[in-house]
Length: 405
Image (cartoon, rainbow, N blue to C red; front, side, top):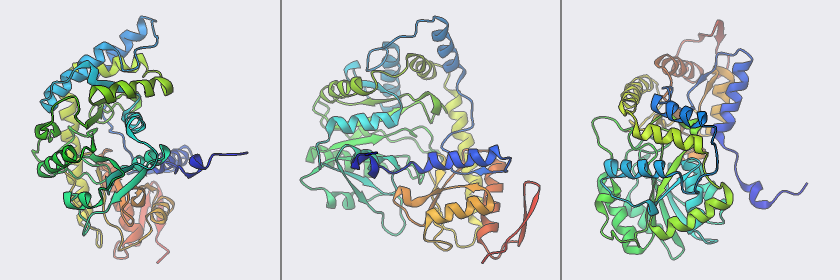
């Protein structure tokens, strides 16, 4: 059977693979702790469920405009005004089947073969793969001295004649780092000067801690015309815990938006009208659930940092947002894939290898589960790796002995 070279070069999603392995072990009755999850535990907002149910009850489930139903477009415009202080028109908005699809559609719209897209590490695993699927070239900028806060100078140094775009994700998956206002301002102004697209992936925008407020990239725009190359992506998956609804959106100039609508029309036609109704309900409904989730995650973050702080040899930058952290485990292993397999086999704990995010020797740990899962998960990891920890441990109802060096 012949498979295209391009398809063969696309990497398997590590998070989906680990989710499947964890589900398989749980089906066998194994007491697996999942610290790799990218899904908050909180319930989907009631307003989203009611809007979804109301649409289903009409039994009128049809195609919609590719860019989304008018009600959702209106809700996205309102959200953009309130969250960013930016007034946008319907012609600037397009709904997508998830923020990941938004990334794909945007890059398909702006990239030519061999165009370069700059992505600071650590980066979300799908960025380089999507760029390569569109015959572009991902250019990774590594942080200095383990810092997760990118430096504008490092990014500027790799910009060349083939650079088409820069992607910034803040708060950042996988590190939880929140980029400074000064850095974002410098990037906005630099991209305007160089006529480079700046894609802001703001999917974790409202999940930010320690009294900080999200930075609006629009505050630093000087070219507010319809020639602006600033593109903003967002969605309902994270802040409303609606990961299964797969609704994201993009805000871009009218020319880019019109073209990406054509692109989307040829691959997805339109997002599901039922799911669009749910997203509209979430955006227009009571917003207390977002703050409740943020507070829960901030408390979970504090617990995770306390547990990791007592772990000899592990270094971790305190995340300022999201529900992830990216501790450095190189004192125990410099191969994060092997380390993940070891921890799953010995301790029944799911983690995600840092190499997939451009940070070898690190593991992405999620704290969006329960406090019990966080403390038990770190306890098991510590037992499996730290020779100073007790030699025996109970995992479920089984006593386990550390019989390896």
